[in-house]
Length: 132
Image (cartoon, rainbow, N blue to C red; front, side, top):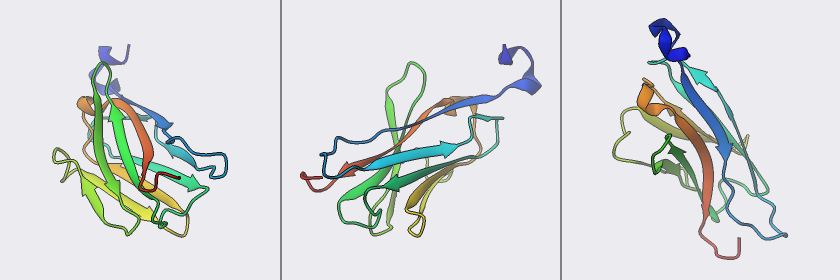
């Protein structure tokens, strides 16, 4: 058990991508990558690579959410197609959401991780156009 030795405590970070329903003509794929185990006080860095649509297209906003064991979903933040960012009020000083338009990817960085940050993290999008 990792909890049996304080120096061996690790935070388990699960990575999954949620993709909103899409039509056959618009195959949008989100592929998430990043660390799986972290020590407390380390920073989490996740990438969400998008294909099938440009992240600067006006169709979508790009979100990060998480689910802690036995808890409800928690929205963390988003980056809009114009590059503006909105954060959950509980994370403004620890959370950074950014993007790289050349790589068509967006990122989450959460600093000073604690045991409370043990969760499954997801990248997802919402569709601003009902036909997407």
